[in-house]
Length: 129
Image 1: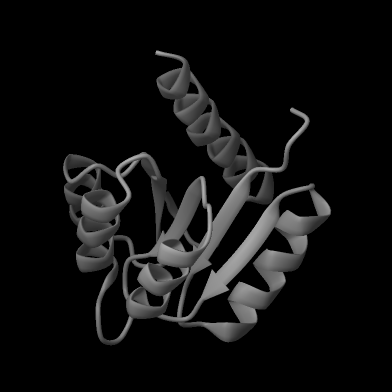
Image 2: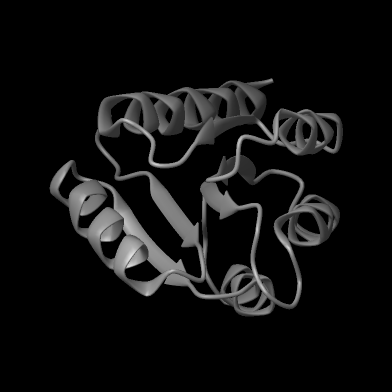
């Protein structure tokens, strides 16, 4: 893959976001970050993003509402839900609303990286169709 996958990481936990951003960037991904759903939507309106890593539980606009708004405004963007709470029901609801997949936090780095690659491949296939 010659071009870097553009990822938006949305989570209200600053230390987690900073650590994950650095680890994904080391793997050659372009990573933008947002601390809230509102901030994520603003960034998506101004930047080309392929995959969003979206925390389910955030203050203000939660992950489910953010997912709904992302899929409405940016249907091409794939969203991977991240949940630190063993709440599979919410993750399944997210999939029903158009999320690509979900992972439990803290996700294994390899699992997360390959899930991002899979989501990006889906976008590339859709663009060719």
